[in-house]
Amino acid sequence: MKKILFGATELKISPIIFGGNVFGWTLNEKESFEMLDAITELGINCIDTADVYSRWVDGNSGGESERIIGKWMKERGNRDKMIICTKAGMDMGQGGIDISEKHIKQSLNDSLNRLQTDYVDLYYAHKDDETTPPEETLGAFKDLIDEKKVRYIGASNFSAERLRKSMITSREHDLPAYAVFQPEYNLVERSKFEGDIERVCKEFNLGVATYFSLASGLLTGKYTSEKDIENSSRTSYVKKHWNEKVKNIIDTVMNIAKSHHVSPAAVAIAWVLHNPSVTAPIASATKKEHLTAFKEAATLDLTVSEKETLNNISA
Image 1 (cartoon, rainbow, N blue to C red):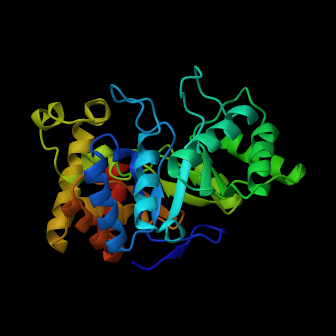
Image 2 (image 1 turned 135 degrees about the vertical axis):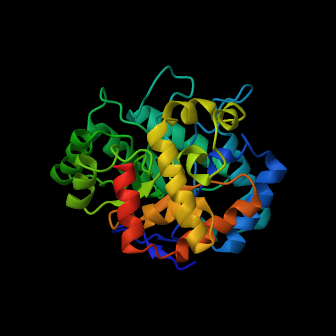
C-alpha cells in the first residue's frame, strides 16, 4: 500500500489504519500477534489504540491493547517502523472523562510503559472534558512534546465549537495544535462528521482518521437478519442502528461489491476513502482473511454512479 501524509504532519501512513481495539478483547495475545504480523506484511504501518481498550470486558482494567502491541513491537524489534496512535481521557477508574494536565501526563506515562516505548507518534484527547479549559490540555501536550514523549497530538469526539476553540487557543497562546481529528464516520452514521465538524477540519487543515468505518461490522455483509445480530459480540451498536434504511444500505453495498468482485467491507471502506476530507479510515479485523478487504479498498475505484447511489441511500 502506498503511504500518505497524515494531514499537515510528517507521519507517512498507509491508506488504512488498523484499529487496535480488538487486541485483548476479541483476539487473545497469540491471535493478536498473528494479526499484527499479517497487517505489517500487508503494508499497514499505523495502529490506533487507547488506554481504555478494552476496559469494557469482564476482568479487564484497560491497557490490554497497548500491552499486547508493546510486547509485539519489543519481540519484533520494529518500533521505528510503526506509527503508534493512542489516546487518553476516558474513564480509567478516575470516575469520568478527564483531559486535565494531571491526568493527561499520568496517562501518557502509563501508556508508554505498556507500549514499552519512550514516545508515541500521535496522542489523542479521546473525548472532550468541557470542565477543563483548552489551554490546560494543550499546555500539558506542549510539555509532553517538549519532552519528546509525543510527536503530534489529535482530538476525538469533540464538538465543532470546542474543536474550533482549541485550535484558536493554540494560536493565541503559542501552544501546539491538534494535527488530526478522529470522528465516527461511515455509511450508517454520517452526521457526526459531515457538517460543522468537517468544516472545522477543513478550516484548520486537520488530518481526519475515521473510526467505526465499517459501522462495527454492520457493513461487512455478515449481518443479514436479527438472528445474526443476536450472535454478535457488538450487539448494542448493531442493534441500535439496525433498521430498514440500514438494511437497504447493506443490500446496496453488497450489490456493488458483487459487481466489482470484492467484499462488502472493501466497498464501505472505499466510500470513506473517496471522501476528500478523510485522510485515512480506521478499520479492524478479527481474522486474517478479513484483511483482503483492506487491500481491495485501497485500489477500488467506485464509479460516479456508485458513489452517488451510496451517498443518496445513506443520506
